[in-house]
Length: 69
Image (tube, rainbow, N blue to C red):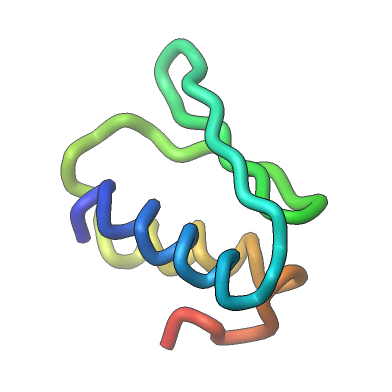
């Protein structure tokens, strides 16, 4: 999955859920804060599907279990 698609999906879900969304460019990663949950995403152009699912799962507290399916 492309990195920009991961960010686009997170931003759209945050907007649909009415939760705050912010990105902060760090040295080698992008810091993403959705609601009260914060995580980092590496700056690779292509992100493995398994890694993307695990990353999406980190925001299950904000969006609900399995929100990306």
